[in-house]
Length: 400
Image 1 (tube, rainbow, N blue to C red):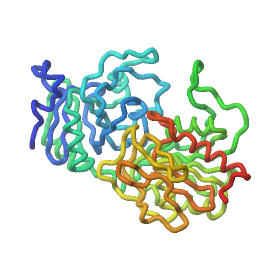
Image 2: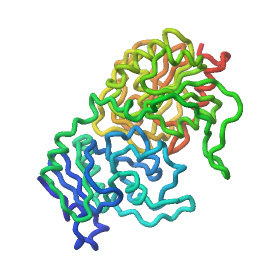
Image 3: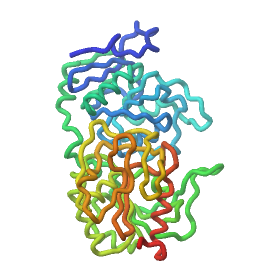
Image 4: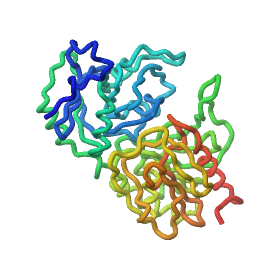
C-alpha cells in the first residue's frame, strides 16, 4: 500500500501535522489518504466520486442519486454556510460520506441553523477534511470511480488492512437496484412550490394538470418545480405498476432521478413504462435515472461511465433550440446513443465528452434529459423543460 505525503494532509493543514490523523480513506487499489474527521464516527464503504459544484453541499448530500457513494468535493470551502432544513432534498442524507480539502469553519450565513459537522454527526454521516482532494480527484479520473472504505476515529486507531479488505469487497453499483431503497413506500400528494422571498415555500392552491411522479429517488426541488410549473402532483413508489398509474387518470407521467444501475431498476420499471406508452398517449418526462428508464423502455441501452458527471457547470447543447445550457449533473451511468431506435431522436449532448443528455420520441409528447433542470444546486438554464412538459398536456401543443 502507498500513503499520501505527508499522511494525506492538504498543504493548508501542515501547521497541524503534529496532530494525529483522525480519519482515513482506503481505496481498493491500496492507496491510503489520511485526514481529520468530523461528523459521525465509524466506517462506511461505498463508491468514491467527485463533485465540482461550488455551492449546494447540503443538497448534494441529501440527493438520493448519491446512494452508495462517498462524495469528494473539489471546491475547498465546504461547510462555511452551515446547514438549514430548507435545503434538504430528502428527509435524511443519502450519500455515505463526504471528503473535503479544508476543515469546515463556523457558518457565516443568515439562513444557517446548524454547523455541517453537527448535522453530519446527528445524521450518522462521516466527514473527512484536510485531504489533498486534487490528488484524490486525479486518482478517480484516471482509474475510474474506485471502491473505498472511509473511517473516522477521534483516537486515530485504524486497521488499514481491514479497511482495504472492506474496500475490495464492496460489490459496487453495477447491477445494484438502489431505487427501491430510496423510494417512498406509499403514494402521497405534493403541493409545495419553489422557494420565494419572503415566505419560503408557498403551497399550490389552484387546480393544475394531474401528474403522477414515479419516485426512483426524487429530489424535493424537482417536485417543487413541477408544482410551480402548473402540476397537481401525486408521487408514487418506484415499483408502481402501469395499472396503478392509469387508475389515477393522470394528464402526464414524470420519471424521477435516482441511484444505482439503470438496468437493474429497469427490471420492473421498463415494463411499466412500456405498458403506459402502449395504452396511453399521455406526455412522459424523465430526468436522470428517469431518462435512462425511458431510454431502456424505448429499446436503448445504458453503460457505466468511467467516473461519471457530477457538478453544476456542465455544458449541454440542446439540438431542438441550438442553444448551449450550463447544467447540473449527477450520474455514473449514461444512455448509449448508438443504441437508440429510429423513432427516437437525440435532443441533448454533453459538450464535455459527447455523451447523451436527452432524447425524444418522434411525433409523441415523450422526452427526457440526463441533467437536472431543477438546479439544486446549479444554474437554471434548463427550467424551461418543466414548462415544455406542461405545454404537452395542452392538446393544441402536442407534437405534430
